[in-house]
Length: 283
Image 1: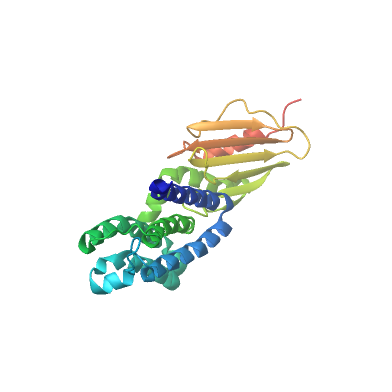
Image 2: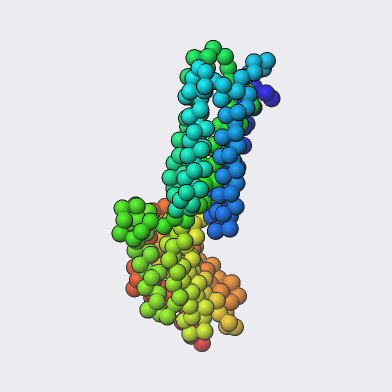
């Protein structure tokens, strides 16, 4: 099994990273805060790896000793870990997108640094310390993502246009629901497009845009809930998205539209769709 240990370690790291992303999408703010704390601990462990033995088998030599006496580049990934921790301490979650970039750069720097330093020192760095540091740095990038995507760039800025331009029509359509007396909330993350809730007669309507995990896509969901009478079945899908689902239960109706880019939706079409589904069923 040992010859495949590095491969299994990388595969496990990737699986944990995807799990962290899924938790960030599903659980929202609480998961983001927990993962941010874990990412900080992970980066501290990577930094501590500078003081551990990087020698293979019987050879004993710390990364700090190599940096001070023969090749300073071995400390590059650890310096990036220190930068991530410093930025988080000084600027907090506002700088989270930059910490993701630095953590990814830190992870990518490990293989060339290890290779080049091996050539310069003439011995292998397949010991647990550098390998664990490399895997941990990759995990840090994954763990920081849920905090990074909660940072909303200022409206009108270039980054705001990059993040939301493909879904601008959907965001504007949800905002327009104030015309129906709905309570509207702006996007909580750059992966969302806002939410709304309100009443159409005696029918409760909830609009959400939390992303879909399976399949990965932007999602637009509506739920109508009737207090007593069974809901009507919509005649046809509204064609807002590439993939659409409509389902009806005893007292509710559910719509889900999935898209990897934009939605064909406008304020008038959304309002009409909500009203048509909520209208009383003829006797």
